[in-house]
Image (cartoon, rainbow, N blue to C red; front, side):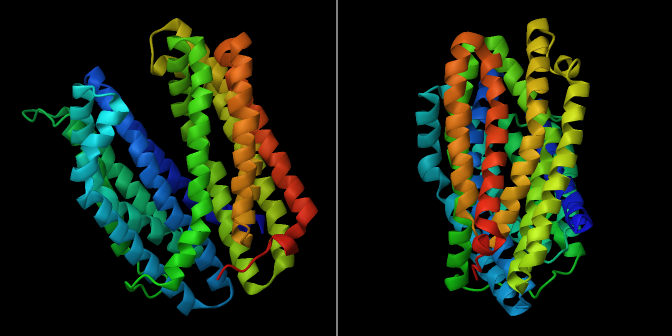
Length: 433
């Protein structure tokens, strides 16, 4: 069964890694613009964090409900889930994009404290990127559907297509080429939108795993939202706690903040296996709960944890190996590069905990206990990371704050393990559809 998890997780890992690479290309391209444009795009990223949290409602909800439905042999139910969710997600995307003229400038004004240069750049970027929302939401549903039906490779191809188009379009439209001067921040937003539609179009090369037909949102769409809501809520709580955590890092000064951002970018490229294993565990346990085979689900939890620990152990080794020189790729400041090395080593020591906790979380969500991972992660990110970071940074600066990555990751791994051992698969298993 471990091979089942690995076989499903490999294409998922390619998909999420491709998405991260596109973000990196955008960061590098925008970094060559003015300081105001960099700040504007960074500010807009908070808006799209919320948008992605909404997309997670549909992606997570469809994965859990469709996996259980397919495990039970109810293809008709899975088709209804996909059809209603696709309609609701696109309706929401169209509403948000079309109404942006009413609220976008107000949001940017409030977030930038009225900085006119940041507002101008943020509006140019955001108004273009918001055009991608229908594709973004549709892709969230389609990727969840394909994966739940054990067809992850079309989704990987979609993400790779999007990344390839973005890698070419983002620098071209942002910075220009030849006689074309580029569109600045607005070009980066437009290129990101084009990349999203290219990824969506890639699905045309493969027939859908089920009959796909838009249906009016009714009971099934409402169920998907309810099941997916804890996953989006988890992201929002983590974001709020992250602000407290970064505030603690800031006590180390500008060099520490720069090192933190560089280290976070590098770490983001190697932690994707944990999320891939989590999704694979979710789908497989969801199918087992749907079919009523709880013994198999129980064994699958153990194998998922082994895969998560092994893969993230390898990721940790990669971070340690690149830590002495990775910072120099982004900065010429010796102090920043040195602090980046420290960040990457401390991050590396936490990765096995991340892999184990994500494997447990995915399996528990697939069983239908979708609120439990949210509760555990909310407790640990606040009480084992954000608040301890504030305390430790007073004496040890950014290094003290970074050390709390370990208390957070291993804390949630221990709590998830205890929940699984004390409650057991039979109590955690809940048919949500």
